[in-house]
Structure formats: C-alpha cells, structure tokens
Image (cartoon, rainbow, N blue to C red; front, side):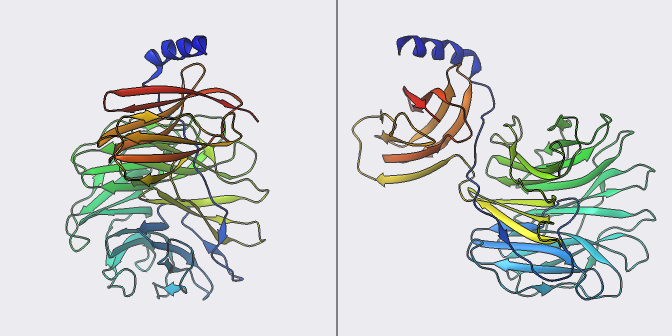
Amino acid sequence: MKTSLVLFTLFFSVQFLLPSNTYPQWQPEVRLTNDPASSITSENNAWCIAASGNDVHVVWYDDRDGNDEIYYRQSTDGGSSWEADTRLTDNSAYSYIPTVSVSDQIVHLVWVDTRDGNDEIYYKRSTDGGSSWEADTRLSNNFAASYYPSISASGLVVLVVWEDNREGNNEIYCKSSADGGINWGAETRLTSNSAASNNPSVAVSSSFMHVVWQDNRDANREIYYKCSTDGGVSWGTDIQLTNNFADSRYPSVSLSDSCVHVVWHDNRDGNDEIYYKRSTDGGLNWGPETRLTNDSASSFDLSISASGQVVNVVWTDTRDGNDEIYYKQDPTGSPTGMKILDDMVATEYSLFQNFPNPFNPSTTIRFELPKESFVSLKVYNILGEEAATLLSDKRAVGRYEVSFDGSGLTSGVYFFRLQAGEYTKINKALLLK
C-alpha cells in the first residue's frame, strides 16, 4: 500500500495537468421515425436536435410528400415521449439540410432552399417553444452555392455558419444576430487554406463561440475546432481533434457550462460508426474518443445537444433496410451518478473507502463537507494518470454519494483523490474484471 501511494504521488506531481478521460453512461437507442420514405438528418450533422430543460426539439428532411421538406418533432418530457410530426416548409423547391437551436422559448431553424434557383440559407423561428412558426427569412445571397448550415443561440445572440465556394474553394462563413434573429449582421469568413473546409457545426454560450468542421489539409479528412471568446470579434487557432488513417467526417458540437461535446462519424472500423469526445475546460484540453454505435448497418448524419448534464444524440441509421431517425441519451454527461444523502452539518471533511472494494465494474464513494467548498473528485491509475473526473464544482455542506462505472477501464489498482478546501485525501481501490 505504501509503495503504491508513493508511486502515485510521484507521478501525480507531473501528471495533474493531463486532460481527463471520462466514460459516459449512454442509454439504449430509440427509433423516432417509421414510414416508407427516407427520413434523413442533415449530412453535416449540424444540430438536428436541440434541448432546453425537458424540451427536446428534433428536425430532419423527408420526401414523404414527393418533395424534400423540413419536418419537426418535439418532446416535452426529456425524450421519454414525442409529439406528432410537424411540416415546416411547403414549396415546390427542395428544402433540406435543416439545423435547429433553442434559447428559452425561442426555437431557431435554418436550412438550405433552392426556391431562388440556387442553394441559399433560409431562417425561421418560433417564439412559443415550437407551437407556431414565423415567416421565412433569406440569410445568404451570392452566385455560389451556400449549404450545410449550422445554428446556435444563447440568449438573444444567434450565430449561423455554413459552407460556401464563392472564392473557388470551400470555406466556412458565419453571420450573427444580436436580437434573437430579427436583424442580421454582415458575413465573416472563418477559414482560409488551400484545402476544402466543409460541414461546419457551431455552439454558442454568451460570448463564447465554438465551431467544428472537417478539413482535408492533411491529405485525409479530419475534424478541426476553433473558438472565439469575444462574441466572434476574434478567433483562436485551429485545433485538430482527430488523427487516424480513416476519414473522420461530419462533426457536430454542443455546449453545457464549460463542457464542449463533439460527435462525428468515422469508418476506421470498416463501417460508418458514431464517435464522441469532449472537453471539460471550454475547449482547451480534450479527452479520449468514445464509440457510440456498433452494428453492421451504417450510422451517420448525427447531431448532438447538451442541456445541463444530459447529452442527446440523434442520427440516421439503415439497420431497418430504410433510412430512419434514431435517438439516444446520456442522462449524466459524466461517469458519475451523484446524490445528496442529507444536508446535515458534517463536523469535518471526510472521504470514505469506496464500496464494494474490489469492484466490477461499479462502486460507490461517499464524502462529507463541513462547509461549502469547491470539490474535485478524480480517479487515477497506478501510474498517476488521470482516468476519470467524477466531480469538479462547488458543493454545499452535506453528505454525498457518488457512483462510478469503471467499465471503460482495465483491471488494476486505482486511486480516488478528493480535494475540498484545504483537505486532500487519497483512497486505494481495486477493479477486478
């Protein structure tokens, strides 16, 4: 025990800045559509799902009426049940590649429309949570094709990004509104390199704006990321999120507090599957990849939305012999399920031994706080490398219980480390599979 703790302490002194590895608890998949026509989420994976509290909004395009039109469906109970489909477009031209965002009761929608004889970006909104919708607004107007849009809203700030080849090369452009979609500013070009930059997705929180896209500057399609911390006035450098021999395509990004969630589809396993990764510090550091789908059919055109700790994903799937919309959820957004045992006043900081121990694959950790404190509870392996972040925020006085699922870890010795105020304690645990 003493040797292990010494080894852990030595490695921790140089490893504590490593990004965290997390293992979310994804629930079973739910099929949302069932008709003979093809129901398709947007190819660029740009926010075909948006969530606010228990309200979940999903959009897709569908040719059930003999023409591609935009359809909408809503759940008001966190995805447990769903209302009937609503058709949002109705004209002789093609309406396709929709993307949706929600802020309070305002639901924002953009899509590509050919009614002008050219692919252009159109916008509409609902101010009553999706019950009724206002008239269409045209956002783009140039000779080149504007397509693959993505929209995100935070308060009255709305940002739209899309792909445009007006310069003879596919580049990412953006346009924003500061009054909830009533008025729109000028366009801004976000990328500029000789390779094609495609399929952008955007997420906004206050003045923080996060954009992901696919790029072939490395002679292979990879996922790139950049952000602005000043409302789009300036933008940081590009960050490469994927790096493997296969094509990583069609990313989607979402935010929840300081967590940035990204999904994409990848054929590294010989089949299109859905992958996920996240940053817990606003995009500075990124955790490992997690594979979300695993069946012989193709899973593609996915979209992600986070609300609080709940992460929602929707995608197109061919497992039924027809393109259908599927949905799944991680209700925690983290490897933990935490509950407050009671709010009795503890007399001192305490971290109790996890139980059961040894464990396979789940265990429970209890701790006590005598006063409100910023709490960090993390898991490390025998080398002192961070394996999971269980908690990293401020908590009130009380007794707490945290569940940890180690199914994504290998068998071996692990350490639970609690930091709260000036208190630090490390407990040893054994995972046996």
